Image 1 (cartoon, helix red, strand yellow):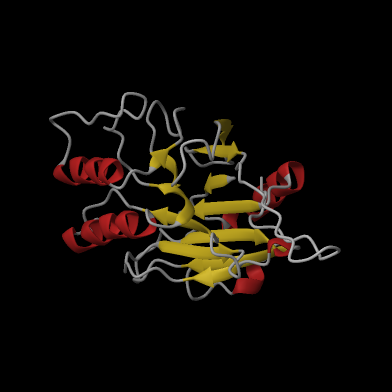
Image 2 (tube, rainbow, N blue to C red):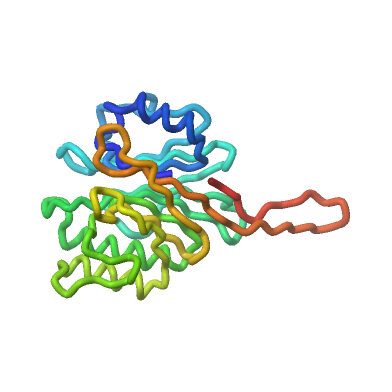
Length: 240
């Protein structure tokens, strides 16, 4: 599940109500507006591990949060890319095909969408394209037509380069419903075309003008039996 919160602290009760109703295994949040004066204890959810990355500046806004059910045994993961507003965890680390789950926020403000950060964002996509992953977040590229996989000629340079990076990395974007007004700003990107069969919009979250998104992740389960009577081992986690 994915939420653009526009300050989660101010909407914590609404958020907890949604979590209690939907009971997702994984929740990604952008625009958390969390900062150093907000402790982890103020953001915790029962039965979930919390991973967070606040906006690395004194400016209000931004920030990403990732909640993962403790039963999935998530561990924090750090990509090589230094893109500022991202957070990752890894599930099934002891297996070769560990699943990476990430949340990313790209501000549309020129103040934060610097040349360096745009380059780091594309580096991130290129880097994780070699992994088994799911990346969700608000990328603020309304010009891209994801149904036809096209980018108009009058789009910004950063938009064109991002679209080219997605194509060149052979990764897949699964959101085809509007996420804010009539635009697709919030994306779900994976390394497999059938990993997310469909993304459902649950309508705007609280007073945010972005829709809350929900989907099911389809992953393979492989059993490894070393000897007769040996324990069954799961190669992937099947998650909602």
